[in-house]
Amino acid sequence: MIKFLVIGNPIKHSLSPKLHNYWMTNNDIKGNYQKKEVENDKLESLIQEIKKKKILGINVTVPFKNRVIPYLDKLSDGAKKTQSVNTIYLDNNKLIGHNTDIGGFELAIKYKKFDVSNKKILILGAGGVAPSIIVALYNMRANDITVSNRTLEKAENLKNLFENLKIVNWGDIPDFDMIINSTSVGLNINDQINLDLSKTGKNRFYYDLIYNPKETNFLRAAKKLGNVTENGKMMFIYQAAEAFKIWHGIWPKIDDDLIKVLS
Ligand code: ATR
Image 1: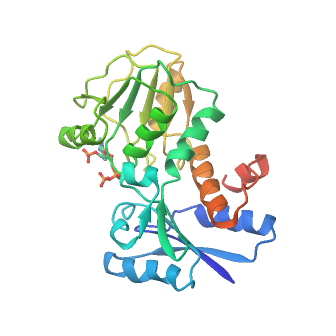
Image 2: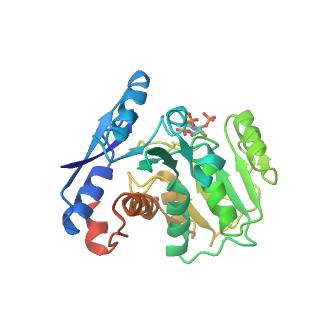
């Protein structure tokens, strides 16, 4: 039976197995997708299992998206640009690292029919996923992106990858049309982001990459103030769909039934 994995640490909350196993069943693919918590020293041998064809593909999540890179033979353009790999597969006996977070975010924004070009965009956070969000926004012709991170230095480092980025201190809120929470604040239901967003007006687009919990305090407060809000569920589904397409050659069906699978 063909085998796929998602690796991370921690990994027990991952919903990727649910999604991939559902799609494989619906496409009559006899496969098995599991989650595996790994330690740093087991990464290389696990990835080598793909070369031996014991595993067909691996999804990678926090904290390994960058750490897997030394064990791969080739990176896609997006993975290279972001130094972040979330999907690994074998092509011509070469281990390829790809980044489907970029396409996942793009499709999620298109799903909302939000046009990012000529909009002022504020990204909160400069962690592992931030470069993928920035590449996706530039792909969609955004031209005014500001990053704010609690640790200023990490935001400044992003300027080495993206020279047109603007950086502001944590706590400074410039005017924006769209604000994206890419921090981990909100993963715990009681988390509060210590920013005062109450004076930023309404009808802005608030996007939170977090999809579990469904509504973070960040989104709940924004909705109360009269803004449009969206969580990271569709991005999660689309990044998985792109990985599914790479491994199986099929773009899986994304409909209400599938969305319910994750509820
Ligand atoms: P990493 O920083 O190792 O890539 P991550 O989970 O990808 O980890 O990123 C976590 C992000 O959430 C970072 O931007 C982090 O800010 P710092 O760089 O200052 O650590 C942000 N973050 C986590 N807890 C936060 C908090 N309580 N307030 C504000 N930002 C927070």
